[in-house]
Image (cartoon, rainbow, N blue to C red; front, side, top):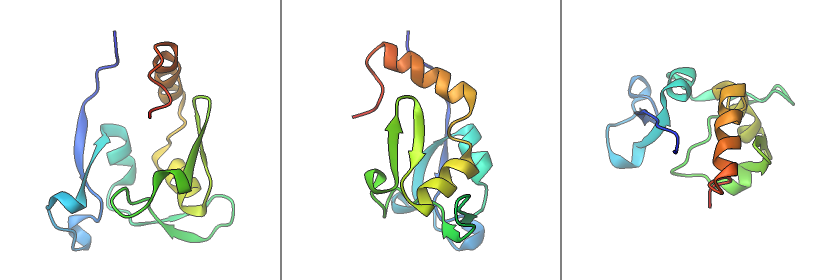
Length: 110
């Protein structure tokens, strides 16, 4: 049995920052990630302390910013590292879900 999940339709550029409710500015996000991101557009890279933008799935290539180390998501760039930390993408419950998905050959995603 797979994981059941509820997703938010998240504004990549928040409406309070002028983001529009159009397909190009929307992405599915788990409730926790959406709440962690909130209206933030800039994050601090935990490695360098530099301010960087949140990863934008409509404008940036996932493989350039992230890679899988088993069930652990690692950041390849400042944007990747900052997004992982801000959204808490390696919290225990998510790693447990990924481990179950890996057991059923559904992780990592294609």
